[in-house]
Length: 249
Image (tube, rainbow, N blue to C red):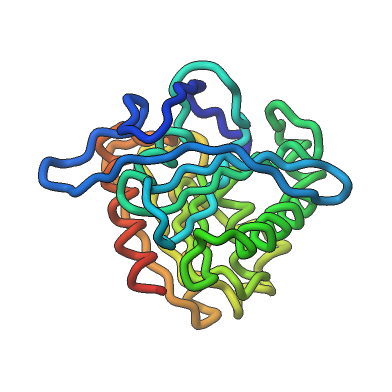
């Protein structure tokens, strides 16, 4: 389950970011504000990158969970581009640096097995922090996970009733989570048919398990797309995710 995503970071404040995804013409976009925050979890400081519309209103809030490549201050990386794009769509996007709690730069397969539940716990502490923020709408949060972040997100969304929906890109089911799925949040699974890292069968296994536990779940496929979705598929995935989250509020 070792996932590598492109590395990059371009900073801007109260503007449309050049590092955001290009959305279809006619989609309303907002100026955004970028901030940095942190919260404590198990004695560690977990950084949060905050991307939100440049208004004082409360907005739908999504916690973004990165892949096993982590978050690095080098060039346009996927999780940052997703967050900026969501903010431009009127969503407060919170990128959780959940590797901060274990001191990882990237994670190997062995790391994922060893620290999986530590990361789940630290993301749940991030939800507690997020719900105290004045810009979180209706005190509800949603999750968007990419690769390893999607697997972690499944566990968080199954265990934590404060999660009202989850969008999962490149996802699957950690076996130890299966028995907790009866309380899982509604899920939108997004997957490339040519994913060479997480086989499509992993997402299908998760889909069937969620439905077997009586949970609402749907799977949308991107024909020919690899593990890291291209820009067009990524833009579509985010638009679908926002529509899904708004229906689940």
